[in-house]
Length: 247
Image 1 (cartoon, rainbow, N blue to C red):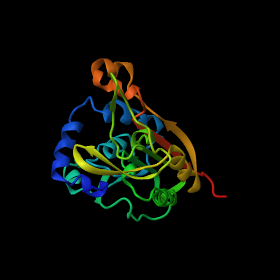
Image 2 (cartoon, rainbow, N blue to C red):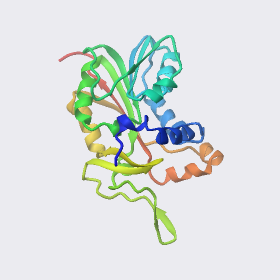
Image 3 (cartoon, rainbow, N blue to C red):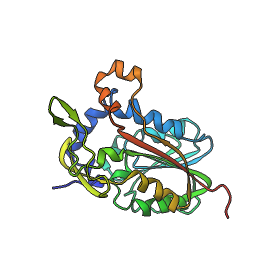
Image 4 (cartoon, rainbow, N blue to C red):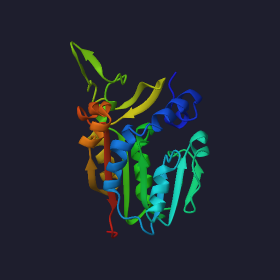
């Protein structure tokens, strides 16, 4: 049995394991992904923001604290939203991000943290995001790096002789992948880096930033287990902008 992203975080077994990972401050999110997303974010003072796949709302609240005027935080998981802390400038909405409907030109920034590898129709979602953005609006998101999602199934580090390697196989064959991550049968979607960037360009957006972050020396000294992420990039972060002027 496979478990899609929209159902995954309401699976009781998965959710318990996920919370244990996130409660560990040495995790990949805190050491690598969050700083990289922060570097690519534009100033948010006075901005209308949409957070796709907000989880417990940590990123949404950080953006509100940084000056965003209004943050719509969207997630399909009841369990995640039940843990989301209230904030005077954050509105939580339970919805599937692939079915979310918003008015055209209604926001200045759309963000998404490690969610879009669960989305089946990436191009369609990016096209909708482009329409939601006002002229000059930004889209910043992170996904598992395509070298991590390539192998089918996603087996992770593989022993070969006296060392381990990360298999990058079937890279050109895009589509669903299964993985044991906390539970068996987790389903994600593999896309090449060119496909992820090409989807932004096809939607009329301009690529403004790209990062393949890895842990810094201090993080590795404090948490040596993070050193494995120096051997292959775990996360890809992209930033794009809608044209400031029409035409």
